[in-house]
Amino acid sequence: MSADQTLLAFETDCHIFDGCGFPAPGLHSFLFEPIFSIGGYDFNKPMLLAVLTTVIVIGFFWAAFGKAKVVPGKLQMVGEAGYDFVRRGIVYEALGKKQGEKYVPFMVSLFFFVWIMNLWSIIPVAQFPVTSIIAFPAALALIVYVMWMTLTFKKHGFVGGLKNITGYDKSLGAVLPLAVVLEFFSNVLIRPFTHAVRLFANMFAGHLLILMFTVASWYLLNGIGIAYAGVSFVMTIVMTGFELFIQAVQAYVFVLLATNYIQGALAEHH
Image (cartoon, rainbow, N blue to C red; front, side, top):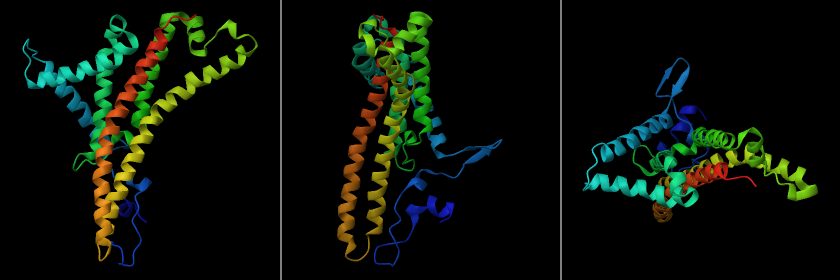
């Protein structure tokens, strides 16, 4: 199957009983032709959606708080509600008000950036979650990782920072070397990996399920298969609604973990 055929898998005229197989979505469903190329670098649909996400997040908060009023208008009220949700529901819970206030803008930006990138999955025309491409969650997890490591060594110094990320504790006795090695690999290698993959895997799987039922609804739209097409279409609606919930949850979890990492970096080592 050629690249053009795989990328246009959803536009096929193939139906059940027509003597053709089911055009199942797969990895090819996450590949896109470049919109344009610059110096050998391709700019495609997920990149465009990521740029639009940045514009939307910055534009929204600029519009909401650019000329903030004592008596807020509707847009400012929505902005304040979203800002306050992350501030009080995530940052303050993990870091406290005094210590966490300086990290609120970053966490608010991170939450809405991830959420909007997830949300593109159910937006007409876009219909693709940017975070289902591993590079985007990996880049965000890397930013959090660098911040976490920087704060750890800035707070505790080099030796104290190593103790912090390895869980060094003399009271562990003979198992201390094993515990240090396990904690080191868990914190330095596994933690940033799982931080990125958790978001990526959920969005990848969710998008694939929606695609499966959407394509099946079209494929079954022939003869007696119409009855099954109706069931598949209902499942598409159900999965879309469920995906809306998962998109918000994954943005929440991603930011919650980021906040917990910072809390660990700032915690006193005993």
